[in-house]
Length: 341
Image (cartoon, rainbow, N blue to C red):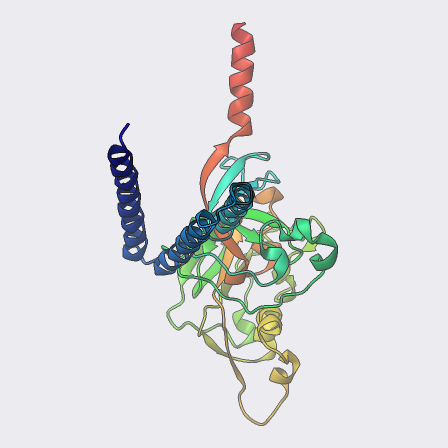
């Protein structure tokens, strides 16, 4: 093969690769993920700079070593980038989402859909918690909450992975969006848009929707029915309506709203107790985050918003897109296979 033919093929491949990368970056910009185009441009530029500098080294032995080290760290950075910003793989831990998802199912979680959340501490970075476990396992959040723009907002019916306060991850279905009122009557869930976007301010407004004790279960997995404190007659089969807070929603503080929203205000406000001090005027609070109401598809064994309360946008990891491995289907196929044999 002549040198001219070799170089022409080399530059042709480079040209095709460059065009492909430019098209990819343009697609991300068109779908509203300009931050992804920016980060990819930085990674590609660094990759080109490092390998160009290594090629300038005359010592072949040193060049091969540096090529190996750079290739290793390139793969590591790409893997961290994908897990941090694009997708994550989880295993369904419980039966709470049956029959949609089964324990042991391996699911692909799309972080681009709602927008990936930036790390709030070192252990949030993939594999850092493994490498530096003894040093950072107990660290509290170091950085403020920030989420990059996603492809869409959360919709009612979406199944997503969320992070609990203890750091564990669970899979639930969103049934109530910010600004909606939710209620359960005779174990039938319903949600509706609150026109006034204001929660009830009178204790008498928090009425029991029905009296039958069809489901008076008040605890599950060590957790107490969250809204029992609002009305002692409520149970997980009959409660509401309750307004889900949304970002920018303003409400008057009172002893009644305190029963429902004090936990949220305590997390958002630096000095929550001072908000309830009487200062001769009506005190109001404006929520900083969007919140959601989630349930499991198999509600009898589900640790969800009935026990955990409202779910903050900070807890969202990503939308469940694909079931990579289904344990039930595999067992059925194996049984049928051995039956045929």
